[in-house]
Length: 263
Image (tube, rainbow, N blue to C red; front, side, top):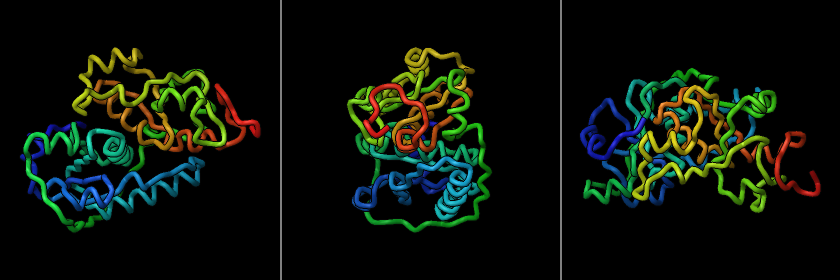
């Protein structure tokens, strides 16, 4: 799930590996890991986890990764520094049963800090048909969470202000009932790499087989939490695809903390 810079450098040029830079095009074109293609994954939001919404999400995500040429190849994602975008790529491919998705631990900052090569310009995609079999055990929708509140371990990966409702980014502020706020940044070391598994386990303090659902605003920071937990040995982790962008805007779903007057 995590790959170091030295190991990734040894993979460059292999036909069996596709390196995917998930930063925006401006950042990518000014300098990237040699051979990497660009997929601005932060632009790919989704806030409808109705049955039809998830079906459409599956279809479009399979098309996206078909274009990237991930079928039959190791896929390695990276962002600026192991933030919240590269982990989303890993989670998406695991959800689609790809089987060999990793991210660069430390990101592009760590890559360049180590004096490793980069190049400017762009690289073409090599599209390959990708079947993409969704694994429902890795994604949660609003209905699943609503129907299982009380037994799920809910992790809110947002900032403390978003969690307590003092920062509002939806029709309603606050958090899901029973959720614990562990901001995604706490998963990281100062150098942008993930904490060792022992520290991650100490941070979350949950049984390794607990059913955990991570959420944030748009399922990016939550994907960071997903990677941290899975790397630390947690076996039953889902990401709430719609996250607060859906839950906070969907009337009738329960909220703890401040809510707007219109709610």
